[in-house]
Amino acid sequence: MSAPARQSRERTAYDVERVRADFPILAREVNGHPLAYLDNGASAQRPQSVIQAEARYYEHSHANVHRGVHTLSQEATAAYEAAREKVRAFVNAASEREVIFTRGTTESINLVAQSYARPRLKPGDEILVSWLEHHANIVPWQLVCQQTGAQLKVAPIDERGELRVAEFERLLSPRTRLVALAHVSNALGTILPVRELIAMARARSVPVLLDGAQAVPHLSVDVRDLDVDFYAFSSHKMYGPTGVGVLYGREALLESMPPWQGGGDMILTVTFEKTTYNALPHKFEAGTPNIAGVIGFGAAIDYLLGVGLERIAAYEHELLEYGTARLAAIAGLRLIGTARAKAALLSFVLDGVHAHDLGTILDADGIAVRTGHHCAMPVMDFFGVPATVRASLALYNTRAELDRLAAGVERARQVFR
Ligand SMILES: Cc1ncc(COP(=O)(O)O)c(C=O)c1O
Image 1 (cartoon, helix red, strand yellow):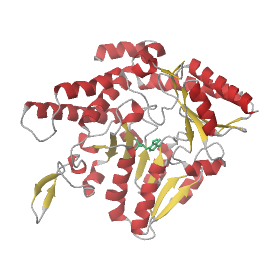
Image 2 (cartoon, protein in one colour):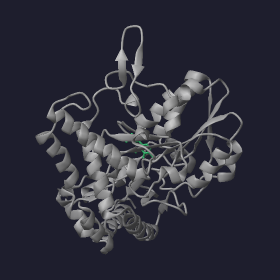
Image 3 (cartoon, rainbow, N blue to C red):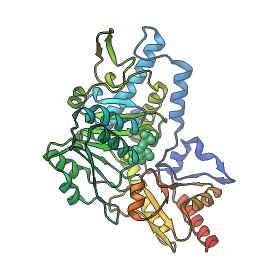
Image 4 (cartoon, rainbow, N blue to C red):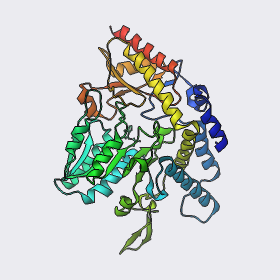
């Protein structure tokens, strides 16, 4: 979208029907009903511009990147690196050297665990996470703790699903070597007070990684303003292709870290005696990357900026309030996660109906929700439930879809009564 077109769209009122028209999949039916896609926290849908960007690349410019003098390779490299610049600007990183392309949030966190934490950790050192983490921000730390003798510490949450900040601060000890926290919880929607938490860690010279997988599609993120050391996120939750993610890292920290994976592109010279490594960010991008995916990701960022992050946040918040009121009015329904600062996500259980049964009933009505533990089993344990139903909203969802959700849940309640 051209700059003037984008600006004029920013000025106009939020037109959800126009946004919906950009997403071809939303026109389809599921089980004889219009699709109501409320599983965006797991993976969002793609606008036509993202689909086209990938297709155009394959039709027109595909070749490997960084390696060829021929025209196609240069075109592919230019498009790939242009996407890196879009990501840099999107999160306001100081330099493109701080933007590493990975397969997703999971790989980004594992990279930090293995390349930053592992060489530094000694037995008895601590890594501090919170109780509301996705497994992707728990297991990599458990692995590195097993490898080094370090310990994983967990800051507790309360009944609303908010982090107990005083407890978090108490757990920051002289042995804490890294703090790793969700920016937004995928199971509860809680938006953590990351600015305050980062300041507490920084006061003790402890670096902080934020898992931004659920934040970037909904909030405007500025890594320099946050003063965060590492920030991990995935393209597919922000309307881009799967298999692409980002690790933002402060340049000085990335410089100090050894490469994680070895192979092509991450080297300068190789002999059997000694290998020298490429400069940032390529040092951490071994092998042929997901070139088409990265280019599609660039198009997704253009799309998000075109609609406008602040307008998206305001619209989604309105949807959240509407959906919360609709669901809270249903007898026997318990909302799980009622944080005061919350992204547009509704996790709930219904008395006498298993989450999976409810999900199946809703699917018969064309409504796609997530059911299960949402890769956050400790959160389920905390609330004493095996699973929840989760409706996670996006920029194209509507009040009418939330009405359908509430009606479907009400119908299920009647059936199981
Ligand atoms: C908070 C959070 N962290 C990490 C992940 C993992 O993301 P990915 O599967 O894209 O690596 C997810 C995905 O659901 C998530 O919601």
